[in-house]
Image 1 (cartoon, rainbow, N blue to C red):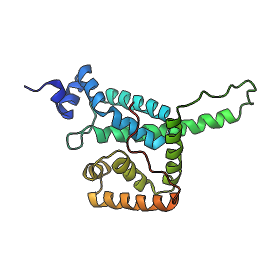
Image 2: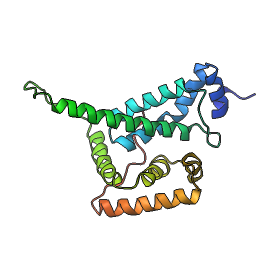
Image 3: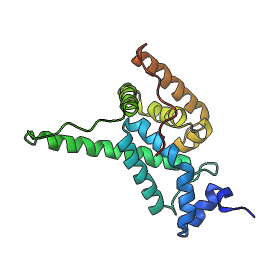
Image 4: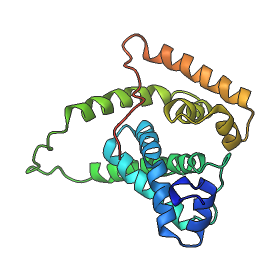
Length: 197
């Protein structure tokens, strides 16, 4: 008899679809770090990544009957939801910024609180990488984010993106080569292990 900890994503999602909160909680614990790191690598902000991660799992709970497993794993579906959440947040942030710029300046604005130095450095490096990555074709950006930044296998990414594994490998290879050219020698490596949610 398997314990709940040993159950597959498919078994846990089936239970979650029936309203089992404990099963959903285990899925959350199993995948939250990967989703959080994926969000950070897309937005270069720890706080935005935290908000996006919460939105991903809220969406997963609401749509728990609709989830599509890839080779028995919920992670590729969760990462796709995360990508969409970050895109939506980016659009909303642009609209908020435009609205704020139309307001008169506040003369009593206090200096922002000091951030932890490591977080600031990670965000600065990631922003530089994202600026360069935004110059890549969308298909290459998506393959890079899934396979390199979030360690999704080429086979799983191919199934998720609806293309061949060879196409995924080619997109990742082109993305890496272009990023290397765009970032030059001054590029700091993209962090692969980031903070936990």
